[in-house]
Length: 316
Image (cartoon, rainbow, N blue to C red; front, side, top):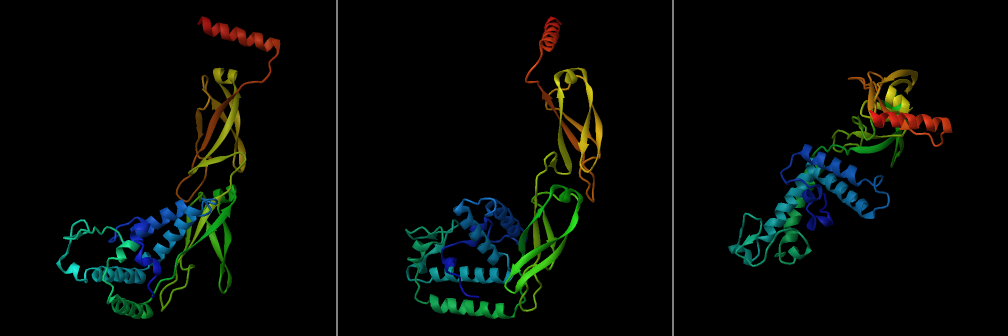
């Protein structure tokens, strides 16, 4: 694999925010977190976020692949060795802080100013040897294909009940369509893995995976919190004081009657067990938020009645 131009100026581990010795799971978690935060769909008008997303993706393309990561690490070690091969560096040792001890110059990061201080007399031969070995490894070692993400848009009820649908990807050899089983209860932002449906492997390596990232549309009546559905029920002040019963809609079923206790304040949540989202593991509840309503206009008789009630409460 050829040395990428930005390897001299970028620490790919720093781009992903991981230590150089991080394992593959840590690197994957860091990439997924940054990719979600910086994805262009989330920041459509932020070119800086888009550029950072590209940088994070490019870093993971190297560090997320064992062969490429080994080549990158070889390159970093080779450059570090070249930096210590000059005449002045013969008496220098690495300090605990990663600087050159015994020199006035402080070396803390790999950037363009750093390279001006290196003895580059034999670096072409050195890099040629390193990348020659890397190229031989890459030519023979099996490589797993890249993982691919695709957005899967679902309606609110489709996400609740689950369905079988399709995802179509545009590839150089034409569109590819894959069937996706969406489990009941899938939530917004969840990823559905299709093993072996990602990028093709090379040299006999296995293919990568396809991840369908779910985007769930809203609903005009219901909201959702995990496996719980949410809905509002409006009552008047007298009903809140005296208590009442209200019919509450359910998703795809008959309304249920809910008892509102006397003295219920605005904003209280009442729970209807088992009328939420049903998944393979459990079923959520229906959360009914009580909303008090106040009439815009009242008649004289109503005003007198309300005044009488207010006087009675003040006197109590």
